[in-house]
Image 1 (cartoon, rainbow, N blue to C red):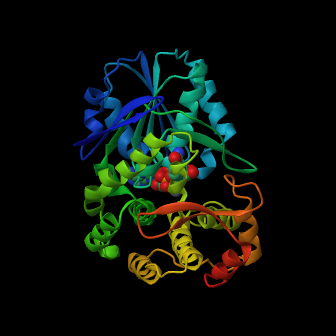
Image 2: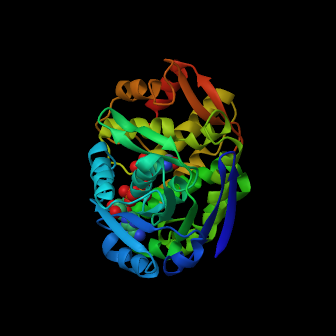
Image 3: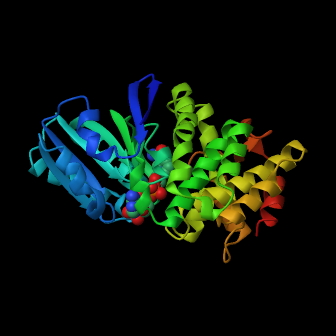
Length: 354
Ligand code: NAD
Ligand code: ZN
């Protein structure tokens, strides 16, 4: 087991990463709560819920199983959970445990942040993508008008990441999370990027074990940035590398068509190419594209989308509403910067991705 402490202005919490941590959850949870309320989904529950409930046997343990998928991250589901907790008369000494991927983590975190003005919250991620989503304290749900529009900054008391759970993850979800890990390497250091590429050069090498050895490194990239800028006024924006086009693709296609990581993969490549055009010096765009191809990740905008639609989405990104195009660019690998980019440059680069 590896342990990382994250220290922010609002507090500090441990992140435990290792194989076989699920059955040890009870010993890793330091505080004693009157009850535990586990929120999980319909894919994760049959595999891991029982195992977790058994370890928490000393306490009153309840669970809620949401339908797997992004469509559960909404107000209706949130209301059902809060109602269930109220009916069970759960008090403020309750601990909400998120057992699942980013969907469950975001939903359960928002429940924890708001139930009786906030109860304890534990993240137990089970997807590769959740190495990103479970760290940093952003929780929330979607609104019909857009993704993640309702939420809070609500750090967990701890993150307990049993990497053995990745063994049952569908391969496409592993690819998706890997794209986010690649992003963490791109924004942090050329060495990390090269080591990752060398260790996992193609899809047959993309296994939970291979990825597991890099997880703590990916998490520390995120943790360090969050420590510097918990509420996203500066460097935390770097985590958005690849997400401007990524989000636009997800929105235009309808959520669920492309995985989040697939969007981030195309978006990262696009942002790197845009960086090349912006700074006027070569960057390893081709190298990254070839790696994505070997990993089975997309490198182009999927068919059926128009440049105009994507330009519009990128202009009015949730984090970017002044009508200009803002991107996280890369002067070189490991040196991200936030820049306003002229429309013509964005458009020109986008055409080579269509
Ligand atoms: P997810 O939670 O939907 O999980 C992906 C799929 O894998 C689901 O079908 C799930 O049921 C299944 N699954 C999960 N664990 C499994 C396991 N161990 N074995 C078998 N199947 C398993 O999606 P995700 O990719 O983990 O997360 C995406 C969500 O995370 C999005 O809603 C996104 O907005 C959010 N997110 C949040 C942050 C943040 O900082 N809060 C950051 C990035 C993404
Ligand atoms: Zn992301």
